[in-house]
Amino acid sequence: MEPANRRPRERLRRPHRQWAGEHVWHVHDNTDEFFLVLEGELTIALRDGAERTVTLPRGAVFVVPRGVEHKPSSPGGASILMFEPAGTSSVGERHDPVPEHIEATTGHELG
Image (tube, rainbow, N blue to C red; front, side):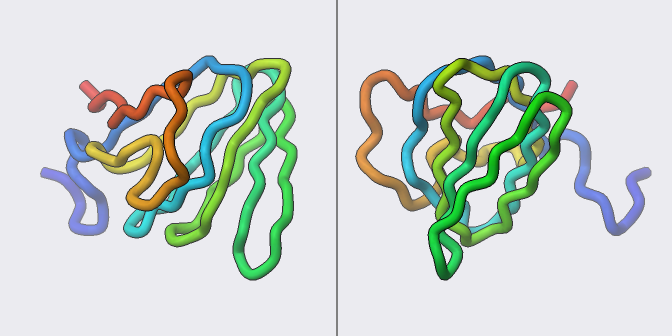
């Protein structure tokens, strides 16, 4: 039996991505987005009142709060681990046009 304050395991996803380049500006209206950098360096541009940038080296953790517009990028490439609810689109509910080189996915359920 799951504790009342935790979501059931099947409702979480943990995509592990390796990618290089820029993602699109996007927003997750109903969930935070957790990033753990496993290799490389990840930069996340944020628009939360003012535009700012956070640079995450290997081993760094960052959470983008729900409702905050953000755009991850990694010119040199990065391997990241993310946790968010299953069914969460990698391009959020609101986003810029998605170019062909970006794969819009909903990740993988924990098993």
